[in-house]
Picture 1 (tube, rainbow, N blue to C red):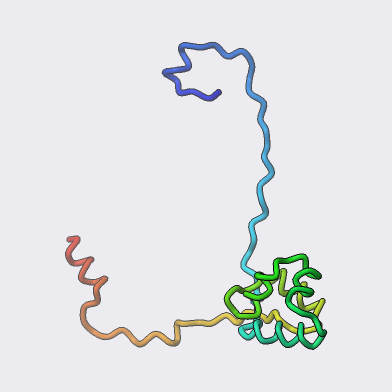
Picture 2: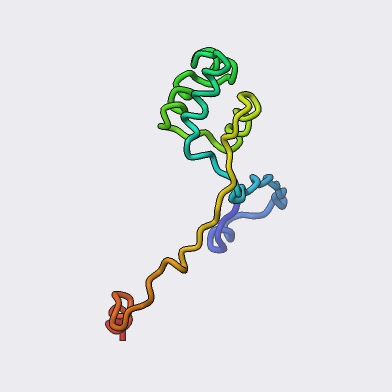
Length: 125
């Protein structure tokens, strides 16, 4: 038990506590891939091309039928890992590379005069 110095004076240390190391979870880094924008229609077309109903397809994937329905309606997006698995099963491309956008060039040049930030700095003085 860990206690503060004031409380520690009322007890004695019988033995040192064992240090237990808890393995930390791996931190997921931002993936350079994302699920395609039109994944819902691609998924539905590929499933229908293979002649599977949503129920049969969900059973094959070991997912709920409602999840497959939400994917095909575009209400829910599968993770990149699940999309990769679906790609292999359906022979369709659902994952695309993320394109990094730079917004620096889209910013308008700073107009002369006060901005809200400048006003806040002036008020602090």
